[in-house]
Image 1 (cartoon, rainbow, N blue to C red):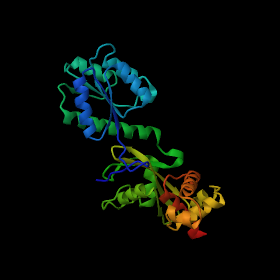
Image 2 (cartoon, rainbow, N blue to C red):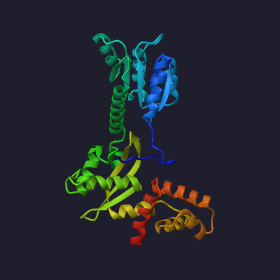
Image 3 (cartoon, rainbow, N blue to C red):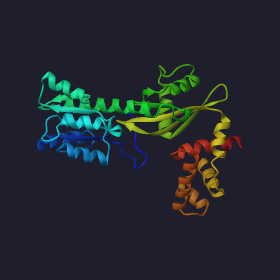
Image 4 (cartoon, rainbow, N blue to C red):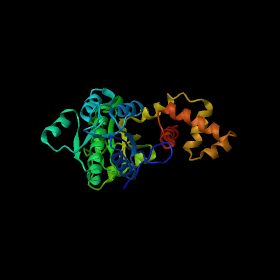
Length: 305
């Protein structure tokens, strides 16, 4: 199984789950179970506390007790769904009420599902994982489709295409002869390699290139890529328009030759910290996030220079 990480320290990016219940024993049980599954868990014992948690961080999912003193779960759900920045978060009701009227009330207030108390933890985990994943893909589809003319694609934890935008579909079809997926997995392996390296290009028969750029983890071991078909001149222009300083150009040149930060520091007689600072500026100017992506752009330029 392919495990993908954030850019900060090699740790898996965990989904954040808010558990809202006035019963301390339920909070404790769920917090333990969710933590063991790798979630980051927030707890609230009332609707007011839950709203305070949302002000601090927007979770990826909510497990919500339907019946609580004061503002009950149904009213809290309606308030969350009426707040645009929070409305995408999936809410699963936890209830001892199994009557049809109460179930309908939960769905009508904005809940996506419900589990009946006493809770069966495996069922709760399965339902939660499904709804968190679906909500993420839906939000990405709504907010990140065809960013700046480039297509958007999501790979799941197995390296399979979980979702793609229309522009991404056209880019893959241009590159792989009308195919979006391949029977032998070669297209999927190329996309996984692009995610691991940060950026990868594929030459097309007409002289253009398919560029796949990793832009981040989208949740539950899923990663997001931007796809674009561009000419070789466009690739050169990205570097030429970066307005690098002479020193930054030297650093990038040695980076493209496979030198480490320590090697570059010794070659250019500068501190390791200064090299890191130059690279930060280079990445920002090139519009990339990783050294492998910067190397790919610089390598293309140097080969043609």
